[in-house]
Image (cartoon, rainbow, N blue to C red; front, side, top):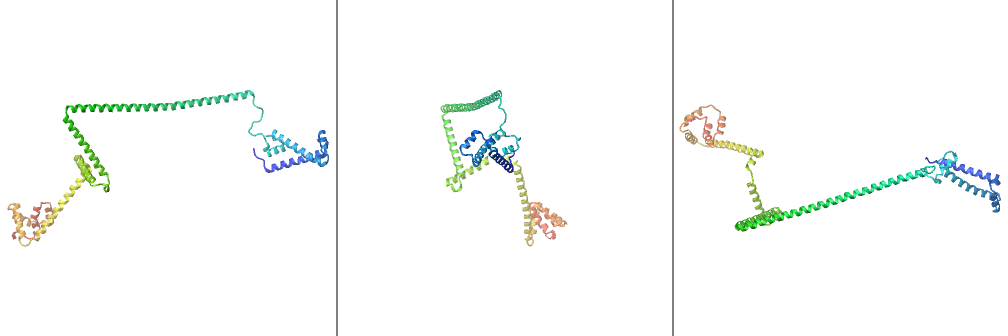
Length: 356
């Protein structure tokens, strides 16, 4: 419902004030005897209200009480009606005096049967809610009880398994102990040897543990004994690695094959370069010879290698028209002795062999 504006409220107040003044003048001046009852007139005369000023004060008080009561009754009973123009605007401007809320349904009260039916439905709904609430709580308690029972069963099963495991281990230990006692009675020497072997194994394990502990220490925290133990541990690790190494598997590895191939190629290259260097050194030595020393050396080497047919072959080689580079390249693939024997022929090809 929209609230009345300030102009509406002011107009309503002005109309109400004008109407009250008009009624005051009419009733107090024109019809004083009609407006008052005889008992009221006697009371006014007795209390000195017979003067005009007294009448005016009395009627003003009377009309104010009258209008207050009448406006309160009208606002209480005629709320929600718009058939009285001024009163409706007056009522809308003074809604603060209303004792009834707009959301309350107006009219007669419901009958007894309707009230009984409503109460019965409400009671049934409340009872059903309470019933469902009880069932829900009971189900919740059952689920919690089931969880507790499952936990208790699991703990009982775990305890029984642990007890059974202890009993089994004790039975195995007892059987081993009985077997050891019987074996000691039958063969005491074998038992002593086994005990010694076990002692050695235990000592070895202790030493390995000490070595690993010494190796794990930083270098600044090691003593001389720790250094020795660490070195021994490294040597033992290398020996174990060499013993457990599978050469066939390593050779079959692709990376190892490639590495070996590269090593072989490198060796061949070095050998070829060594042959070339040897040829160059031998040629330099032969050129450094003076006089007929190189000729004598050449002849002796030629006879030794060819068994006396060196003169004829030397003549053939001197009469050949092959270039020097071809002979030098052919000499690289020959062994060291043949290269040295043929070096004088290459260097002395311009001079005939008959000069010997």
